[in-house]
Image (cartoon, rainbow, N blue to C red):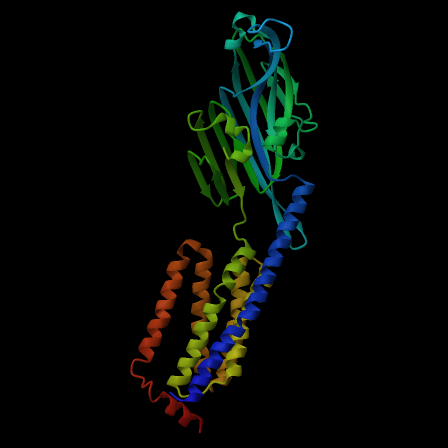
Length: 444
């Protein structure tokens, strides 16, 4: 192998490395556009409502209790004596049964070429509490007790109605959450409140409740199953839900017409204290995701750009060897740039067209350009069409990889194996020691 051939191989490797620069710039552009998309989604959420979390309803029982505390040394009174002190306490109580049935509509808000998904939940909640008797009430230790119904909402701006809450057959209204209390600062949700008045905690009190709720949010809906027994049913015409959180649906169905899901969660499967704080993750959730995230798909596509360039340059090199037709390094570079431009076209078209249409248009443009160029560079229509067919196969494999992330390793491995197998079979009778002389003779 002579120095001229070694120089050609070195030049091809150098051009492959140089083409990493435009690929990196294109990937940076994709990330900038994705960041802008996130900023637009945050802006729309700030104007409407952000991701929503529902916590409750629960009952907060505030009571005052008489307790005996020792008299500190040095104070008036004999050592070892005690005195009575009134202590204020709060007890959070879960509903014995909680049922939520809701229908969710999803709409798209546009800001320029960017989009955000808003959901509108129409929910009917019902159930009952059992409050008391408290052990502390024995012996008259409880001075008085007052209860209030709490409903935690991550972003109350999304509450579209003033729900009429029926409590033991009587209509009530939630009070505004107002300033954040200690519990709200810890949990990150604001609490709508209804004062239930004084309760006799020496006996059992049943509190039945029912209310409708219309709630708007962005992208994600999460519900904390606070009840001892929880039944939650949600449906929507949105066909691309992502079920998450700690509790997956007991039953679910997803089709092109939408989804329906049902959760059955008992107190044995959840931690009540954890449900009061969404940060602890004791939630079920639905993300109303985009069917195709064009920026994520485009970024994944760019990562295969080097593979495209290497396989194409390998095909050029094999053609140069087998057909004894020299290809200038500038021709390698121009074809490599055309391959890189594909990814820029992809992100540009996908912001205005469905992803499959953008991919097909960008691929057709680049394949047509390269095939036409190579028909002239290689001295005939046939080799140009052959390379065009090979590139069509490559783009087809890449599209399959983008659609099926779980099978990307399998498809990529098969592609590399086929490329290596083709190279080995095409060069199995090639005299590599005499290759330098053949190349030199062909250029004389």
